[in-house]
Image (cartoon, rainbow, N blue to C red; front, side, top):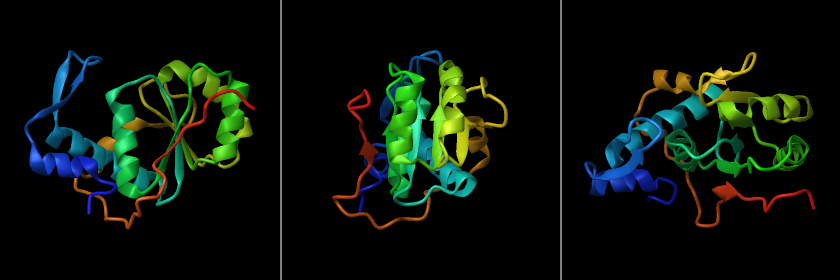
Length: 174
């Protein structure tokens, strides 16, 4: 069943069709095959490198980019839940929302390193902090580590139609 693995289904149906155009990297076209394999690699990184399992939450504070999409679809392959964070919120507001969802990992874009550093001491449930680009702070893991993981599909998890995939807070703290 393809409840949690939409990209695997798309790769099977139209592997060579362009799925995305990465405008941040020379408008590089990405096929469904390439995207699915990248998401598989990301899922294996999250599972084997960070210990993310079904039901775990992973927060992302980043601007739109292909890597963000890879994380989103990788989490679905694991049955894990994306907590997307609104970059317009203050560090205090982001901290409250992140504490409420209790993610296992926080992934951030380099533009948000200062906000993450301000939040960091107040996030007891976050076990791993991952930088999407080369602007990592301190001991944060670089997202590029996913390159050392295989692009084979992760082990299948059993999902139900009502299993969550994304937690969307409306913003603010009320």
